Image 1 (tube, rainbow, N blue to C red):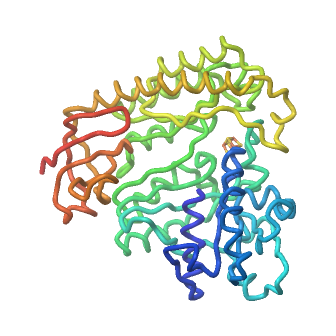
Image 2: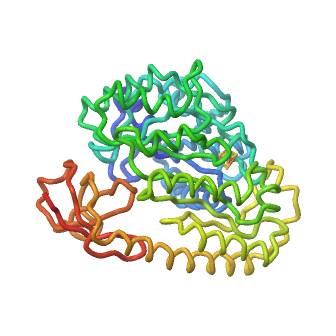
Image 3: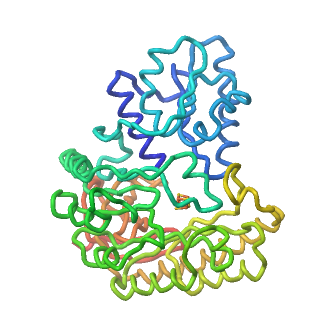
Length: 419
Ligand code: SF4
């Protein structure tokens, strides 16, 4: 979501004549688009701000903007630790930055109001010409007890389907072949009676986009209709990111997740029965307040039973203002780290097994650039959202090709062109 917002902010700034530069030294304005989900992310922002503040102290005219969730959460308090910041703008206000710059009178400007975000008609700046994020909703009404998102991104608002279709058509005209629809909980999308699976059908019917992905889905809203659309809908990629968070029903209840492990497992079983090759990825948290060793073992058991293709794994970090922040954060850090390490090691083994099962399969792959390590190797994403590396000519970049998987490790597949 932050990457998508950064792309939209870049588009706003470009339209007003601003241009990106290679180095902070050459910049007149330095923008931090921030995340509040974990304390570590906020501390890194303060660290980088501290490093760069010397550029301002040297007498140059640089300005600093902190935008996004951390700006929303802290507002004026952010200036206590970083008094040299000029603009503090929440996620809905960041797109007005050019106007605030023009109106600025030299003192710090803070705006954390929600609503009226004006990004619907913008084509965000993208990292790759062939794939794009499309935000379909903002905010969240779920209030999971550990999560700061509803407080910093506000109530859930779905964008009109018509605007989404227009944006996708204009992206396609610009060469985009793959879109990822974004929302904190895409499954609860609603526009005048049109739900998320109906939106997917509309996109397949009324746009020329070749590949459709989405994230993130909340298990409590994953309907049979959506499972059916994912399995049989045209141009749907075979990947579902479905956060589980814990294998213990007591912890899930304390997290306010509104499903049990049994329900989650039955959803995955239904999905795999309908679409056997689908890849399923997840988010997991260890060390939630009062999580016992036995409950942690339930999360490990869930990983073994469900066999996720991959997972984002975190140790619990209390966020001020959330319900869980009032619970006793009673798992000591070394214990949280040990639990996380155990979980990561297990998931690594499972990912290796899952990836090796891919050997011999042929997937349609959007080749989107060179591998990080070599310009002689191309990279792309399979339909299941796995990174695959292939030897091939640079002219293949941007093409969708059939690739046979020839080998695999825990993180990456290797393959060869079959057509
Ligand atoms: S559904 Fe996701 S974004 Fe919303 S409160 Fe829960 S974890 Fe946070």
